[in-house]
Length: 594
Image 1 (cartoon, rainbow, N blue to C red):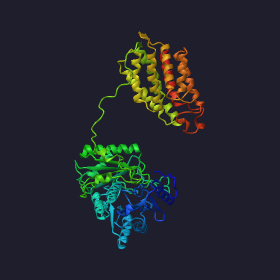
Image 2: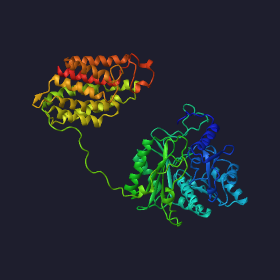
Image 3: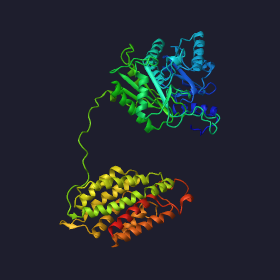
Image 4: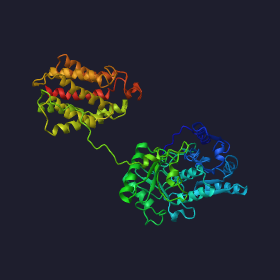
């Protein structure tokens, strides 16, 4: 549970968040006393049904983030996870929105919201305002037996109800049409969320050490968790594919009488609505979306006609997500007012991300791909430079094995002064090159030999060091070819030295790093300098090792070491990880060459 917050005063937090909406959308105004965000008056809005929603804060962008043209007319906020009062909602209905064409008061199905928004709706009706009230319930996490008379809770999918109804109101739909459409959409909608952890509310007491009441144990997932920290239907230990399988069964299994609310079958047109509960990383959320779409197609014969993903209705920084499936049904409202068309209608609300893709793009033919294989850019023409592949393999493997053995040290160094991935990256690349060398069928053509190694490095080593190695090796292949005199010749140390010096010069086009900057160049450049000046491989390796040792006392000028940690912690003790790993390679290479 994340207990650190930038705001400790929840009241200040709520007011600040609401006021920010008037900054990001100038068409909105803020009634601070009643925590109402509403659209500023316009003649255009007076001719349309007003839609008011809201609920407790902590679900941002829900609900105030959906106020804007094409969606809500106003939203009323409570404190974090608590419903606004009936008086707040009444003021929104009677003083902050046009009422000539009627008002739909619509909220999620939670007791406090139903009572307070419902009471305000009744007061408005008593005051002569045409008003309808509806509570959205789309959650299948709590079944009929446990839900009882309360019914389904309202969670992420409810935003689709708001979007569709807001679009219809924007197009001039009547109050009756908007109200009936809300019910129709809800009947065809199912949602379910899962989370790895509960959340801590800013300003509330921090749980004491050892107080694990309600905490979800490591390795477990709460399936059906609500948006206010409410427990779900069960806890499971599952991989992502296993979790998605469980969730889709609860959403779609017609044999689950307790949770089968909507009959969705193979071939139906559906919309998938994926909602981030607040803190799931975008890469994991994208992976979850991919898995849901895959299993819908493979196991249920369902291919969504729209996939809408984003952060719409959160539980503060909830570490989870919800999936909603809407079965598209004829609205009977005529052209331009189908559920799908109403979803696609643009909305000027900061919280509505939508698909970001135009309707025409969704409906276009998307079967075409580039089928031809990528052209191998490596120069595959033969050279006249020869080497002994067995000897080359021997010395290279010796260096690579030294690099692999140094992985733990390099990783430890990089954890202190970098991001901790250098050692693993070097090891991964070295192991892949050894595998390629052990595969046999190695050419005697020196350039061809090098070109067998280059793509292995390019495909297995990532990050900055991977790019530097790949550039240097490609430049080395070019440098070798420049030494080709047109007749067969064995690659001598002098040829290698000239090619390596040329490669170093080409590498300088892409990085400003130089000796003294505390990078792998502190190891590479001394090796190249000694070799190109007639020194032996052993002398070059010794110079490389000294360069790596010297980085311990260097101030970082490039790379993450510039801004990671405190120099006092590692100055004089920790070498540059990349330089150290390369020096290890050169040491092993030199020993095998002697």
